[in-house]
Structure formats: structure tokens, C-alpha cells
Image (cartoon, rainbow, N blue to C red; front, top):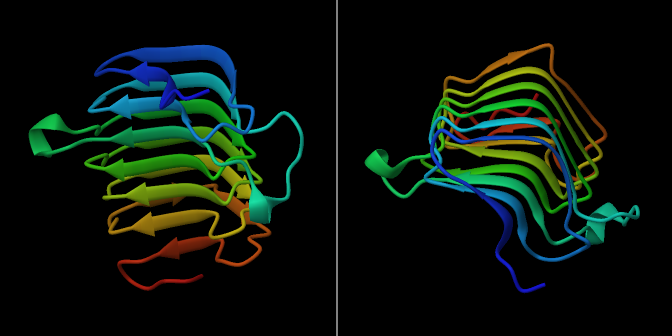
Length: 169
């Protein structure tokens, strides 16, 4: 309790093989502050150990990457076999976190499954469902590639929303 993050990633680190439970704490499971080229693999971040109502969901964020400027970015990171559930944001790329790859990612029962700022993201075999708001939300993010991605049951929002083009499939 009281911590901003459970684990902090630095540039070029590889965080792997762990399960993190936030127990309804309003913190971040893994925070990548200016963590460019970091790797995240075989991870599961839970906001709550019990199922909570998505409308009132857990206040935490599973994984957040953020940079502060072009020379202090969190870009070109890779997520492989990552799970996030029962959170406010499953995966949030907040700022200066472009050109990120997601492969075999599963996000469930979050307020917003994936919130991706900036652009150039590649999503392959990504499954996001039961978000209160949009499952995958691109904010100011162009030139994204999605291959074999699946979203379902977004309660109040869209499966995939692209704010730049006001594109709502």
C-alpha cells in the first residue's frame, strides 16, 4: 500500500516469468519510466484476486510505459505472452512510447483494455474483451498494424477505437 509501482523497468531490461497481484491498490504493476527497448514476457498482472464489477473495477494499471521527451522515450519495447486482468487499464502506453510490439497478449475485464498513445504499434495475436470502455484505444496513434487480433464485449465503448481518424469499426 502507498507504492506507485510494484516493479520499475529501465531501458533494455527484460522482465519475465512472474505474476503480480495489486489487490485493488491504485498503483501500477510494472512501470516503465523512459524504458526504451524493454522486453516483457510471460507475465500476468491482476488488479484483484476476485472478479469485480467492470464498471467499478480495480483502480490499478497492469503495465504502463511512459517517456518524457524524444531523447527520454519508452519506445521500441516488446510484449510477449502477457496477461492483464481486472484493472483500470490493462496496458497503458502513456507518452513517448511508440513502435511497440505486442505478441500473444490477453487482456480481460478492465475499464480500458489497452490504451496506446503515439503510434507505430504492431499487435499480433492480441485478445481483449469485457472492457467497460473501448477494448483497444489508440490515442494520437497512427500507422498501427493489427494481425489476428480479436476484441469482444466492450460494454460502453468500441472494440477498437482510433481517435486520430475517429474510426470506430
